[in-house]
Image 1 (tube, helix red, strand yellow):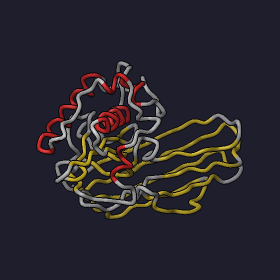
Image 2 (cartoon, helix red, strand yellow):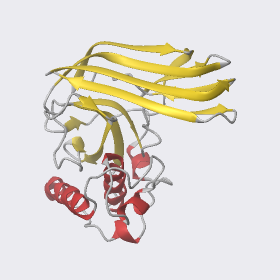
Image 3 (cartoon, one colour):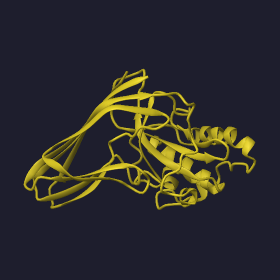
Image 4 (tube, one colour):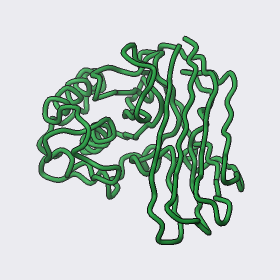
Length: 265
């Protein structure tokens, strides 16, 4: 499948801003699941200071705002050819070792609610089925609905609520899988849906390393493993590591965020 993506993030400030710096992870990389045909990131009201691959292998652009600007716009767009691997990325290794993905973070630290979720067997032959059952259990415990959580809501706090979004589902799944000593990580990216081209935000899912298969994806929010409708952007131990955009600014100006995202075949 060939997907066309247009993604604009605009920050508008109530007063001129002298300094702001953003880590931008909006460049998908070619892998066994996808081939990047063409891609571009355009900046208005600022510039790309430098670009690099972080310790997870994600492409990062450091974007600064023009001193005195009141609007910063980041537009990512391009075409990606995707394959249906039934969620199996395989035994792909980067700079971070597997043990690194067994470690909890502040956002994925398990509490009583996560510890009460089903554990995964040490028998490799049964792990795939049990991980899908874990995904089902999380979605049942925390139905999908926006407005109850925020970008910095920890997994344990989210699970104690009534509803959550894909970020919460992915982080809860990651935290639960690590309790069974399985390497697990968070994935940010895009999802093409049949219902609508216009979307409100990027998507998120989880990956677990299973001996003999390698990294396998689980989209808790949709109850499936990622197929050709998914485009990977970044990975990390939690949502902060793989955030499409994160940063800081100096000053007391109020900030308004506008996101426009279209994903279509």
